[in-house]
Image (tube, rainbow, N blue to C red):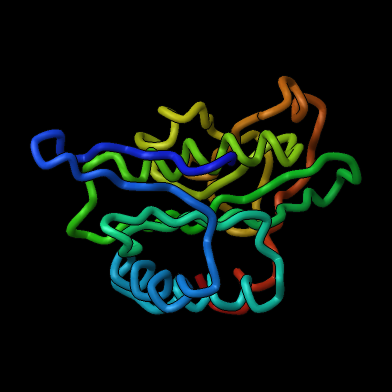
Length: 181
């Protein structure tokens, strides 16, 4: 992502949310945001573990008045029967509860998708609500996954038809299984 992306959430007060890459000084704020968004430490610990292992493909924050209020992380996905392809998994997507429903999660998703295209990823996967993620182009995946999810395991081809002949099971980085999410 070149520069910053800005989303106006209140035209009357001209309050704007900025989307940018994570910085070292954001780490504690990201932990807090993820913990608040999920009402659990599990996802926050997952982000910390992936970061400590340097397995993040990208990590963006949403800021309002300089404060981190949202976060999205993309990490590598491997497909058991495919040695070709560069794939990513979006997880987690987090927005502070006080700021949910204002388009911040959407802005983070669009920024992550745009950056993943620039990074050369062929496709993205996620486990998520089947009524929320289609707005970004995600569809239910034909691939298996390590969680056995069906209608909540979704894919977005960044390279058209790149998954057409791919079969197998999509696997997240080991941190997902170690944290217990």
